[in-house]
Length: 392
Image (tube, rainbow, N blue to C red; front, side, top):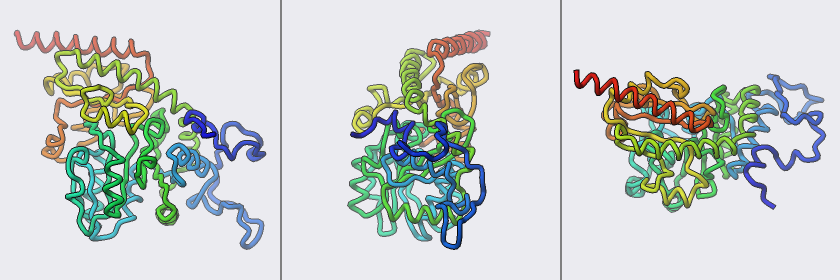
């Protein structure tokens, strides 16, 4: 019988009945760089921690299980994972990428991958005819869904059919929903990307990245590349991510519950001109999300009536932290213009809908009443200050 994902976050089936690790419930941290051999050609299965480490290996098995893949590789950061991913491609290769992506991914593609001879077509994959951009050099389509920060939703299954028809890869960054809410491999993707720093770790205390695949040929290439480039996740960080994954389910559920309440509250404020959350029925991707995901996540973006009001919120929040990143237990508010997308040219940001009055909220697991109380206090104070200034 297939196990539920909450159980998969805690247990690997092959662990049961094992006498390894002295019965330790918390998987041990194997803080070692190298391993002794019993003789020539008689390896324990571990030779050098750049190649593999038992703690990292255990984490990779857990993540592969959660994403229903055959293999997962753990990296020092999400960007390290994407950097290695790009080593699948050669000079002259062409990729179609989502126009609305995390700014760090755009920076990598524009400043490193293009230098190495790879070309890109940046399009709105959720609404444009992707197939019309495919040419004889196209090797992959790379998307986020929902996207960062504008929450655009792409139909993964429909896109996978296009990719397979044209013999190209479909790569999906699944960071925003985590494997708890969405499994792109089941929908036809070839590779899944995660910033493990976010929901998988869940506590804003370590960095990690993952690549997951259900294809043996891709797994073999990734294993060779990680051995060669050396960006594997360290043992202690692997243990921290393992610890975070144990509570993935309850964190995702609670954060989502809070996000829905906050999205509705924001809709009722006159100072907010737009709330973008895929769990709202008016969101263009709402029906697609219901088909391809098990939830809507806890990320939302909203537009304010002015830049001044947006900056005022960032100055006044206290319990809600003005910080980069997302997916932790604490609620974080981010200003994409100067943080996540600072290196994206202004004209591209604005074309994608990111303005100087755009804020992104990663909703945590606090008591939602406390979050609403803080937001209401901040909004009301700003209303008084700004309206008073206009009258004077």
